Length: 358
Image 1 (cartoon, helix red, strand yellow):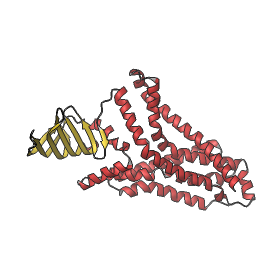
Image 2 (cartoon, helix red, strand yellow; image 1 turned 45 degrees about the horizontal axis):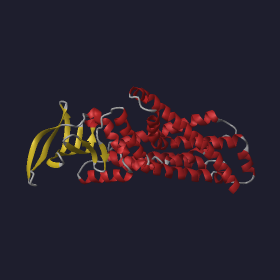
Image 3 (tube, rainbow, N blue to C red; image 1 turned 30 degrees about the horizontal axis):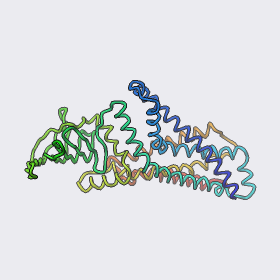
Image 4 (spheres, rainbow, N blue to C red; image 1 turned 90 degrees about the horizontal axis):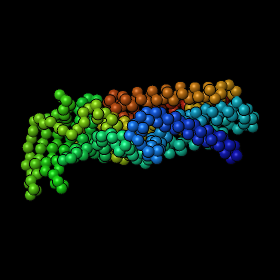
């Protein structure tokens, strides 16, 4: 069995390398066409351009891993069936599902690897990508996400926004530190909520603390105040996705801070749970991909395998996007929204496996 295990695993692994490389190449080509105008316009050097796309690879791997795994399983098992090797294995008395244990274990390890990449490499790559755009494309920096939300640095102030709702024209948990050179805090402004009205950010019930040079402080409550140096809602839409560059630990801390301060955290909690649930779809895709080629030992082929792969992958992404949207909106509990697609496709895979004819 060890020789058979190695053979099955190597057939799957070779296809996995090819399909992953192929999907990464397609992904990068799409990125290249989208950014070609800027690369030429701003005279970005070849080495810098290569680095830009290398920064994207960890993120791309996390996105293409499920479909690459599924296609590799469909093709490897399908080719074994078409070549008659599955018939020989049946004749030798070996249980079919036992044959695919190496692929199942590989799928589980791939899911763990994607979680590791998403935690330690993807956030760094996304930050480097954003820094690249600021440096080479002249894109203005809207701030950076950290363990306490969005941070914006201006000439004379540091602004912290705990929660962004650009789609609703709102920001929450605002703290502004007014700085005087060389580096002395002269004023702090705290406000619970801000709303975009009349082309500007307005807050109500703000607390203003003025600090004197000797360390004294005077507190004043203001009923209405205009905030400056904060981008309008449309420009904040890109910044709203800044939490994607946080590690799970940072996102967990941000979520806890927001909850302790009384803000709703459906979107962040859904994203946090989805960072575990989504990578495990690679393992589920292995279970889901095994039964289909076995249903017809000599039917189908590469074309049918690719077509089936597209249908299954598209179906999962539709369900996942819908479920997580409901979770982010508070319609479903975040943990249910993140895990429901996996549970649905896992139950389907187990049902199909149970009906595989030995």
